[in-house]
Length: 264
Image (cartoon, rainbow, N blue to C red; front, side, top):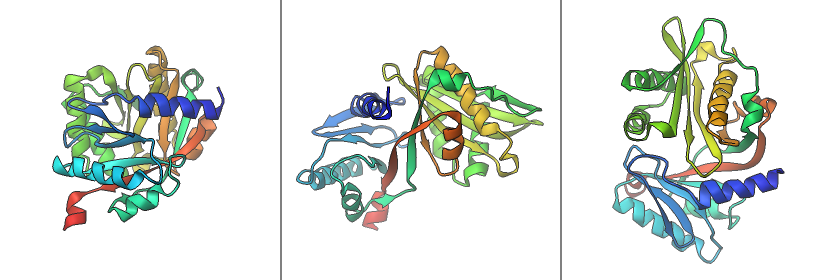
């Protein structure tokens, strides 16, 4: 399968035919828009659109009304190949704020699973299965990214309680302290396992932990029968993933809408 075929498959299975990715979430098809609506701690947003220059502005207004009525902040996940070509400009004009652009990267699971990428000596990869493990993971998140992981904590706790098979979370522990963490989310029927949240605390970067966590999750995905891995890669992780064998299919930019930020 070439990159164009892989992108078409991703667009169809993961975006257009999306399934809910967490407890309490529902995927709705409103005209030419596919969106997910869920609890406040879940991901709320627009997954796919089939818009034109004539229909885009009205669709944007409809999604703002929908999520605002529920009191939800939400994300419009825009890909560079989405139409119309000026959709990003239209979103900004409607009050959305653009986040950092990331690369949509995909690889064959079997190829990555065969990668010899063990963790450094003295580091143990510990599966996250309970609240104590979630606390370790959120501790890494806060130190690695410098952001508040409270929503991540709530989401993981609910996933582990209600849909434990849908998320694989792992923490790298050295000398009793969590130093890196990552998770993988799987939705049966898509063929794609999504790798998310890979982060390492500053003093442990550059020692191969990111590669080890990618390979670890790939082996689990292979065992579960997912032929493809998908990552939204930052500028920092893109070169590492490229060396492992991931290919860039497109780019994606999050456009965030916060009702309080736009209404004052």
